[in-house]
Length: 188
Length: 355
Image (cartoon, rainbow over all chains, first blue to last red; front, top):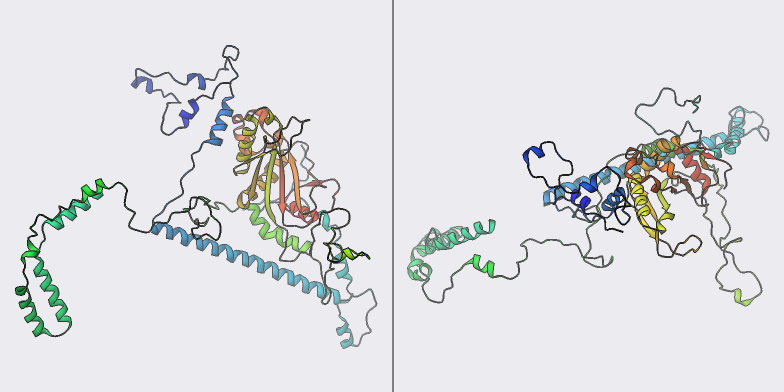
């Protein structure tokens, strides 16, 4: 196996600027043009039989180069003012995120407790919308055994809930949603 | 250049003093005297004092013992550079632990090596989750407990040793029946524990990498392109002779996605890739690990459908584009909660739902 050619390395190196793309005018200006890396960048298939050894695919060489080249940028170093500016913005962003989280939690909490209150009301209500206290106040006889909290019991059955929401529901929100939500007639 | 300017100014100051020193000194005396509010005595003192002093010592510093001051020369002669005048924080070469006083800067500090700028976008999926999905999931899974009623408490999870043997006293408890794995407890879902996406792991094992590293590298690059996260390769732990795998070979690549990248990746999978898969029925309903993590696989053809791979498909050798496994880690404690979340996001399921 041959070692991978240096042509690509040179091509991507900022220090070693080789003309990969031959310009039209470069020939006019320069009489003598060094012929280099033509073999590596030619579009014709390499003659594997004539050239000894298996040549690696150029794409793989390319991928390897970009996967492993060690050019890690140094950490940012800023002056005092710039640093303070960054820090201020960072803190402000954190604060904003915290407030947002808090607001969402509060919203959920409110919804939860209103659900609780609604269920509690349904549980005490009979078919006429009267609680036991209402009935005694109005002088009515107490309701039959199964009448109270019927809707509550139905709600708590959660029939079909574990099958999940329908597919029409699961759409990511967009700025411009379509007028017809789902095309049910679509076939391949 | 700056150094030269500094030394030049220094030299100038030393060579030609603009005012004789004794005059400056008298001026200072006067100033101090005036602050003490005794003008008459101070004036007398000011006139008298310079006469008492011998001015010659100040003016001409004559004598062979005086050294010529040449800062440029001394600067050149100095073998080591002087420390900077201001305090300059240097992070430690390596991390010495929490208790060491010399700590690296926090990750949010741009001077830190671990600093990651961003977030640069607000993923639509995240917005959708917080705006609709979270509250809907909470509503769907709401269990009502009237006042005075509490959710059922499970019995002890580790079993006691019951018997006549005296050795049962203080003996460590036994694991649960039917296996040593302690299953997760599902608490009723409230506003505190609505199932949420935690992270996504994209994993692919490249069998062809046993013969050469090229397929692994291509797989790593494809994974990086898809997920926007640096891929990590893993060594095989055990050797399997049947597959020709030796322990220590690097055969798999993973990417861990959290936050912004996770949401982008999931929305890409759900909205771009899944609709384009041929004869796609959905994800198998029995997926899951009983603790709220779902997994599914993508074939090489499916991976090629990702927009990042599709736009420059020619960059990768077509036979080396890998398939992958996607594992969605959620904060749900059971699979059916996790599946509800996945369905609300848009992942279709088929077949029988298990647990």
